[in-house]
Length: 460
Image 1 (cartoon, helix red, strand yellow):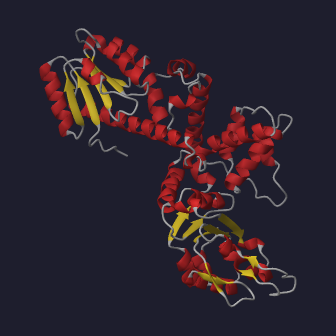
Image 2: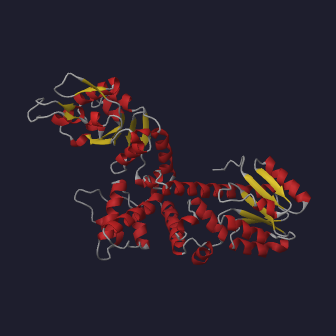
Image 3: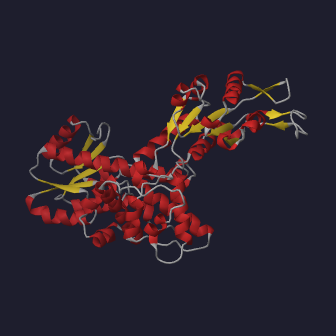
């Protein structure tokens, strides 16, 4: 996907007037917000960790050459894309500059379209770096990224949609397989909305309530309403007034209760069992299902009018197999959580363990992964992840074929770079030496995988 370069700043430094004017004009025609500078300092003064663009500089200049410009630019932001423009005799110098952190170099004379192509890649890399920094800042402040963990496009889209809906009071229907985290998503809708300050989050598993108790559980009852009802009791709808009511496995709700729930949602009032008094309620309803309610309504097993009342807005939670790149991140997170809880040191993964994580199909989704992480922390011996996955519970599903080789290779590459960054504490030069790859290759791979070296720097 091409990045739209409009309004993206490009700072071009060259002491030759003709070159500076022609390149700047070409870049402006290509859609960049390009500025030309005869000397480096005015351009360097514009740089900051939040600078959204790219720096392009000639190598041979009086007073301050391109290598010095590179060094000072990376002091302001080690991840800033810096592109060097070199003469034929400066190629060896440019290669050395890339080892020191330059993004790329262009050899004179060059085709303007070649420079534009390199800039587009650099702009996309810069966008990813700044986006990930923003995610981490929000996570450090207790943002939604600390609740819905992952860097995959699918989970990022879910977070964006959830935040948009959290600001409203609309009913939401959450779709997701078993173990994907439907209640967690519902809690986020409440916690990141205005109702978090007004009322409680009340969760009800409709599949766990006996049909005979459903009306009392949801609507409450008066004393004497039925045998054993010795005192007044508020139901879940009344208890959640001002806040959010989450109805999980809504497809399990009896048809007779569906009718009463629909009326309560329309009238914003309820009647306790055994009472004729109307009680006003102000709640936000969030429901969740793992099956298609519209199909159930066509079969007569779910009321269509209630379905349309619930389905004002929808959120679809992706299964874990659809966001394989998040599996190592989630596993590390859960492992650290359980290691702290059980007072044990986290056990590092071997390459075979990592392969087993990626090859598994995760029918139980995040819940299954979380369970595996705890068993990994508590396990003794050296059976590894593959051994733990083979110990499936009675009635468990058969093992599924491994995912596509390209997906496994991509996820393995990301994890290998993460481990190198962790080991080298974010020192890019040390990572280059450890992995034995060029700086440009490492830059491109880190950008593609959404990795930011600042995440791995020592905390102090």
